[in-house]
Image (cartoon, rainbow over all chains, first blue to last red; front, side, top):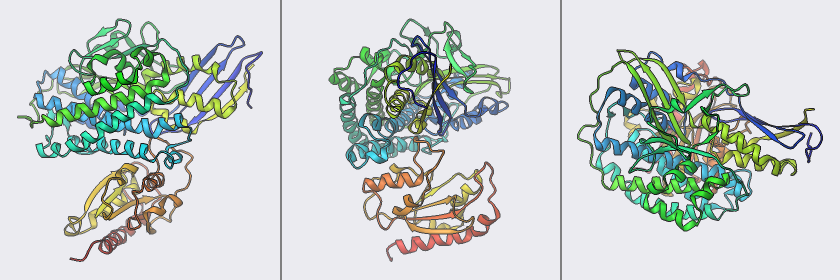
Length: 439
Length: 152
């Protein structure tokens, strides 16, 4: 049943049957008689037990296992894990290895951001049900996006030995470092892609975005000299400042009855936002000069990015450009590491670290015994941390669209959900909006 | 010639294409550019010179298990049934081909060879029907490659 205007008693809006690669969920909205809206993002994907699967495993086995959590951002899982172990084992890695890890991460950001911008989010703004329907009218745009995605995959394949679920990351470094010539072959494609990414920022900024106003708490890493990726302190827009192994002192995971995924929240209960918008707002001064210039040329301020959820596509495009430009710099200066992997010895203790996955902060914490085997694990993915912010923003946004025809209201709310690039964003293309009275 | 082998070795019949590749004599395989791509995506088909021959091999649901089909790659989208459990993070193989084709990146000489499978659950074993047809699957791949390759 569809009701155009919520009047009288409570209304119950259900956006259900989300199907997706890594999670299944639905959206449930309840509109009270006074017009206030409560949103619940229901994630009912069966638990995947990765935190239990790694128990008893060695650190290097963990790096391979956690990569399987996501086909889009396996590098992020590997990076948070490997940094955590190296911090506990006090491993000093070769500076060239550190750069290679940033390059690997750049590759993942490129493929993930290109996928989201061009294949998942662009159809929302251009009025198509999917990229397939869009292709005939926007051939050049999609061609550009797929080329960048392909380049991101190629970077991951060269550094990580495989485009999906790479294999080469090891505690202390890599099982193999790429030869200079292998990376040199990326120079020309990267330069071409940078030009495309600059055009992408301009294009994203020209899109007609729905009005939206929010005041989110933003959280990301911040490093004194680098754009947040593998390293830095966990900071927020309102003063949180933590070591990357100390996530638990300001945040916690809670079980909400409507989701199989644990929701992370700040200990003070305030929802917080992760991802490109948070990073650009909190670390705009660390953007690559070409990305900073492109952002400046849009005349969209970091403040505007922060307040309008739909401008996340601009933030993501700026990061796409940043990742390409940083990758080009690393490739241009690359010299293979003297040691592709440093030696290390296991020891008992707690290994914890946070890095920046394409969708935001990814925190890992492991308890190890004296043999270096995992005894306990905690993995806090960005989407679980963004859930509360998504629900909060949907509650704010819904009153503006619930009076619209069924399909249009659904489309607008899907567009908002996809603005976070959650793992469930893929499925929101296929939402069915059900509205029923729940008096 | 590029051979794009789809599937996962540890998911039952889904590993059939990868296993068939191992049955191809090494001397033959070395002439090809073999890529284990997991799930086919559109960007894997763009950017090749127009004369590059591509063969995509995969195990597919819907065919009788063990049956082998060969067709122009461009026809794959017509055969893909709509899925009730579709994610737009990754298009299905047919969607990926359709997108690449719309971008002009699928040519008449690109081929698809599929083998019907029935079990795609975790585990390394193939079902008997697929196991029994694996040699023929490999032979068909070699035959397609021989037709595609220029004479020495």
